[in-house]
Image (cartoon, rainbow, N blue to C red; front, top):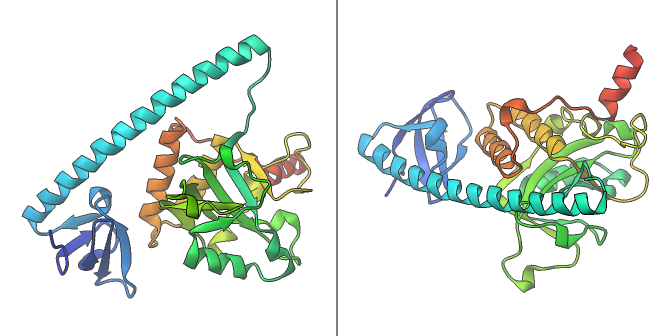
Length: 289
């Protein structure tokens, strides 16, 4: 099926023409926009794009339906596996008398330390053009990072205090395709679920709005180590904020899809995601009192 040069309508951008299309992506030039927009295929035709060609529209709808069935089956499989894992964990906790940790080791924050001695634009620009493999260091428990693991990248420059640390990228982890790709200390990025922000966008999402040191919430300090683990709710709050920041841009569709995918895999209701309660938020509440 050839979608090239086919007319489409977008809910915000209006009329446009498909310049290029393959089984994963469509590139569209809209009359109202100067830059070419990129969309996921066929997911974009569920909420964002409408084909003027009715026959092609029916064909795309069929492919979308097939994809939804596959994704639904995967979600159900993931949910069933998670329920079984939670039940086994619950039984183990009851027998041991222990407590379940609030954080999830599958959600990892990676501090980009090398930026502290220079310009934070270095890592931000790198992520924007090459968010594929991330050097995470030997402290990461690689065995804990699987296909459904989530990661964020943060940075700050040496002239900015720690409360100025910003989140500039987020992605789901992908297991390497071969042993040759399994490099020491590297995390592989799932191309379907990744977001890279500009510096202006990143400055709207401070890391400490979402994260806090539970033992000392008023302390905005990373201390030793390059990594921290997040709760599922913290991760969802970050993705929700990213989707809001990227609204109206070329990554809007990806951000929404990423947020919905994460909430599904973590069994969270997207309509009941709580407000962030990070260190900066708690400090403001203390000051207000």
